Amino acid sequence: MLADQPGRRHRRRATGADAGTAAFDRTRSYRHLRNPFEPLKVFSDDQVAAIHESALLMLETQGMKILSRDARDRYRAAGADTDEATQTVRLGRGLVMASLATAPRDITLHSVDRERHVPLSERCVAFGPTSGPPNITDTARGRRAGTFEDFCNITKLCQSFEVIHFLGGATEPQDIPVNERHLHVTRAQLMLSDKIPFIFSRGHEQVADNFELIRLAHGITSDEFRCRPYTYTIINTNSPLQLDSPMADGIIDFATAGQVVVITPFTLAGAMAPVTIAGALTLAHAETLAGLTLSQIVRPGAPVVYGSFTSNVDMKSGSPAFGTPEYVKAAFGAGQMARFLGLPWRSSNATASNLADAQSAYESQMSLWGALFGGCNFVLHAAGWLESGLTTSYEKFILDIEMLQMFAEIFQPVGAAPSDLALEAVAEVGAGGHFFGCAHTMERYRSAFYAPLVSDWRNYGTWADDGAKTATERASSVWQNTLERYVAPQRDPAMVEALDHFVAARTAAGGAPPVS
Image (cartoon, rainbow, N blue to C red; front, side, top):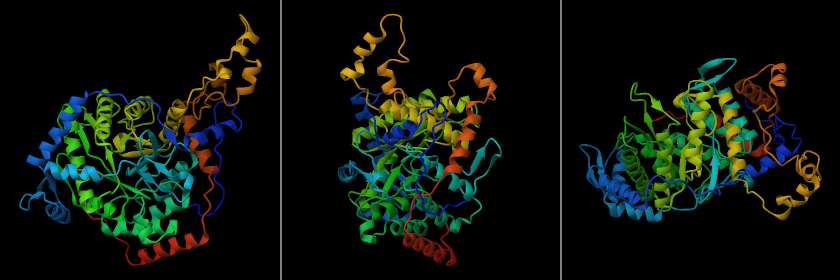
């Protein structure tokens, strides 16, 4: 359950090879990642421009159905053509382009711990866990409804690995009433971790409560809170071409407060989007522009991240498919569209697998290749996602951490100084020798290579004698051992008292029901 006792953050023990303290030291380099590789592309520059122009035409002629009356009023006041009978808002390209001109290109999320700030510009890369599945699973207890204890456990795991940079919805704690849930999960994020917290947009009252908790955690005034981003939300459009009231109101709330809005159409080609990748991305681009425009109408300069979540469906069953070749190509294309606008880009690590098995691993790795080598800045669902987002898995979380750390290693610079070229080492060993014991190796062997968290590199006989455990079984031991060693970050007792007082007062007042 909730671990509120202040203490030092635990240093993770590496498994796999005997890495001593070097494994922990190298994870420090995962705290602020930069992707050194040029993003891959699937479209020419002319094709990117054509997708953008088509999206603008779509907004001018078809428009978006906006279910929030407040949002429609704001669009109308800014010059959009609004039809109240159909709740349709048509956006002229002049309004859209003016909004793009005020959206910031450089965004930094600010943590309680300065070392945990998350920049989202240019080649910066940040990872966060799965967010919001109603179910949780592990190998011992199986699939079940998520609880507050599970939410806290996933947050503790996020805190324990440097390669995770921001928090997420983890799993829905269904043992807490919905009118109080937001209070407890936000307090848990602020107590159990010093990383960037996440807020669901589920109505003005819930968002206001969460903003106040974050303000209290930082010890700042309301005006100071509105001056820089400390948290983020995900805004999913209802594709095709619809924005519901909680999402529209979330854009308004977050833009007003100067907090980060990640606008993410959930477009599955062949279902709620055209069957072609270009068509699905055109629709998603239009919907993102509509949400961005609302944010800039509310507050010019409000921070916006270009979100993408375009994949395809299984045309035999209609079920979502992830980690497919189409998913990867759509990710590359979405990255191009985000860079065309000059905005930070969000993508995901996703799989349709129902278990933490081989399918989940290769689909997730394909998803990560699409995101990271498409130039993504902000990867949500980077660890723990299963069952097309319906379940969070403890074992999958650890397997994903292994993959994320490997990508983080790929991002590290490769030295080519004279000592790296190793001419003296080659001369020392000579023809037909080996490098195990030479001076060059002995100076570097403790930190030369990545030490795996889960992978077992021993030979078959040694592995079999030690129980012949699969990667999933080893991952089960890792997450349990990590939770046993977890220690909460230090917290000012006055801050803890302020959080507790606010949660108690709002709970006594009945909390805040979510808005549908």
